[in-house]
Image (cartoon, rainbow over all chains, first blue to last red; front, top):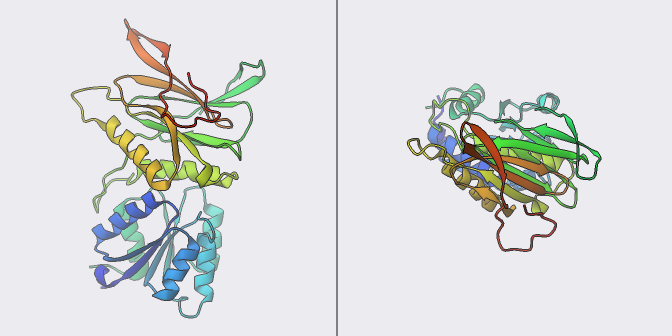
Amino acid sequence: MPAARMISVVVADDQSSMRSLIRHGLSQIGFTDIREAPDGDSALKALVTRPAHLVLSDLNMPILDGLGLLKTVRETESLKKMAFIMLTGSGDRETVQRAIQLGVNNYVVKPFTVANLKERIEAVLGRLQ
Amino acid sequence: MSSPRHAGASGAAERRIHVVQGEYHVTGEDGVMLTTILGSCVAACLHDPVAQVGGINHFLLPDGDAGANGSRGLQYGVHAMELLVNGILQRGGRKERMEAKLFGGARLAMNLPDIGRRNAEFASDFLRREGISHRGGSLGGGGARRIQYWPRTGRARQATMVEAGRELALKEIRVVAPPVDMGAVELF
């Protein structure tokens, strides 16, 4: 049973309000090592500098979007085993299919609760303590 | 949402789309007017003057129960704003060009928590945090409002709903705007 505080997370979302909300939710679950990125490219740079155990990424972002980030992560030897959860809208079914093809581990449909988020993370990483 | 056609000021058919609570609508279509009716809810009217695309949302609460076992709707306001912003981005808009007007956030009952103020504060704070230009609107007060918004131009019109006996009468008021370069914004 992994301890949330031992898991490093990178949150990629172009809206700072959403990043803050996700950070708040992750903190409530018990995560402490949380980094934020405003786009896929910044997230990638953060991951290359210091890999994370988990990436939570929005789909629609400037410069490099969520699918582009996922594809690059899966193609990069040092990052490809990282857990990757996509944050999607309810109307993004085709994009979710594409994300599954690219190797996404799970996805969370917005708006979501902290309980939803925890459930999706635990489905990937195992029950958290 | 409904979309009856009415004659606009120019005589051309104008399509009205009513945006209800919890919904949003984005369009770059000419001859479309978006409407909504607000109490303590807030509607953000967002527009990119270059891409000539815009839209409005209508949210009930700034946020939900953020507890670990919270009910659905953790981020009503954030989610509503994100959908609106993304909808405009997907139609060629750019965030740095967006102009916003905020309406609603009234306190309809003094014996209940002031959700309207929280909604208004959330929406204003959201624009500040996201770097979106706040070009005016009308927040607070004690009455309901009807909003009309033309998303291609960013023109907005507000009517307050005042009680006259048992009937609600519409009263047009001027939209309060900050003392900045208003560009093409029309005031009523």
